Amino acid sequence: MREFEYQALPGRVVFGAGAARTRLAAEVERLGASRVLLVAGERDAALVRELVAPFADRVAGTFSGIRQHVPLAVAEQARGLAGSVAADAVLSVGGGSTTGTAKAIALSTGLPVIAVPTTYSGSEVTPIWGLTENDRKTTGTDPVVLPRSVVYDPELTVSLPADLSAASGLNAMAHCVEAFWAPRRNPISALIAEEGIRALASGLPGVVADGGDLDGRAELLYGSYLAGAALAVAGTGLHHKICHVLGGAYDLPHAQTHAVMLPHVLAFNAPGAPDAARRIGRALGAADDPAGALHALASRLPVPRSLRELGLRDDRLDDAAALIHGIVPADNPTPVDAASLRALLQAAWTGAPLDGPCETTQEAAS
Image 1 (cartoon, rainbow, N blue to C red):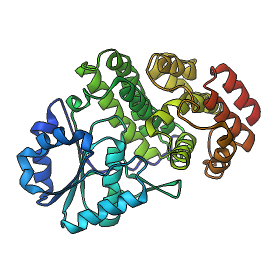
Image 2: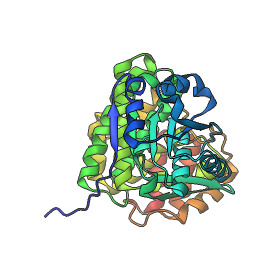
Image 3: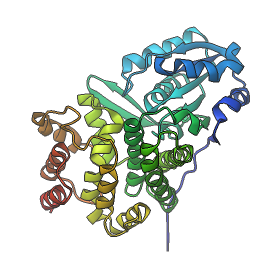
């Protein structure tokens, strides 16, 4: 008989083309916020001014010092500004680092967050926070950081370049894939994850070919929402542990690191989770070869294919493996030891074809 636990998370989602321009003010009103701290990068300044114009009198301050992986010093600056302007809510407009900064404010202040994502990270629907200090990224889960309301507007992602769209979309797909074997996996999160993979795989090629493909943009944004929803419930596993270490210790770009690692971690874990692998493959259109299908998809996209391309030196791989080994979930579907982890990183560093690293990592794990 089937047994599982599923903790549904609170939160409101508004989804539709033009929603950020026509419905964001109502979400601010719904919270009863009168002194909003706006968190948004300088690059999005013109867009943000347009979006907040209907409630500009409620914006008490703006924090624009966004940095990837949310360094603790940046979080403290943002928290200080929230206090100095007596903010009663936080509005984030931007990608995962922007959302992460808003979450960092909420973590210590309890302020409610409204998120308007402009990439496909999925972070906006998770209670997961992350902070980096002394080259180490720490993550945790706290319901206080979960945005109260999320406004998804495909029109806001049209200006996202093809390479960033592809990397961000694969980052979201990593959330879906990981949800199949993360510590709190369950049948409901798996359903959500499978549909998320299908939507992302469907939308990515068209958006890369034509950045103005609004239907494709909507499919990607829908998939990223599902990715975040699956990850929020299931938690994180081997893939995210690897990426968090690589990002925090070596300042590798977040989405691109996920894009590089995903096919290799999937190839590594698939033999230990055949049913999950079949469902992942089915969503990708190749139930018998999920890693190959993902590799083929990535090969059509303008994304890095190796950790070497991201600037990681090969003499850092031993240290990286040691940092990761101590935080690998005990129930990872394929056993992980020091040798197999080092081989997995080596495969991702070289970007070698998957039949090579897949055999290498599995031999090391056996």
